[in-house]
Image (cartoon, rainbow, N blue to C red; front, side, top):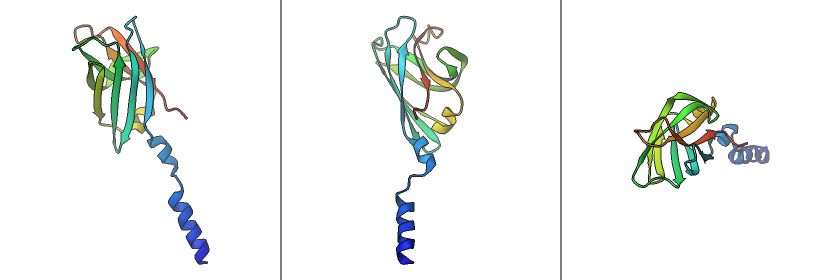
Length: 134
């Protein structure tokens, strides 16, 4: 009886809950748009009921704050209204704590979109579809 209880306890201790797989960080590729040459990645890391989003782009203009957002839809068909605002990408980097869980972001089709500048907000320079790689 003791061995059985110990075995059950050990299996329960080392078993990974099903939801843990969804709680792993994901990295998405950001592809250049409108011949910008700007490419990179966005890493989405779950932090409880929030998500840390770190964007790293290459070939960005020096000193220009490029607005960034999470939009519903895909890069091919983006809803123009931002779902969640991200910190502007400046000198190729941006870090934002989004006030929702990664699970919430992954519930619908979403994409990260980077704009040329505040003055040229309608010009997209990089985009990546947020998908959970399984």
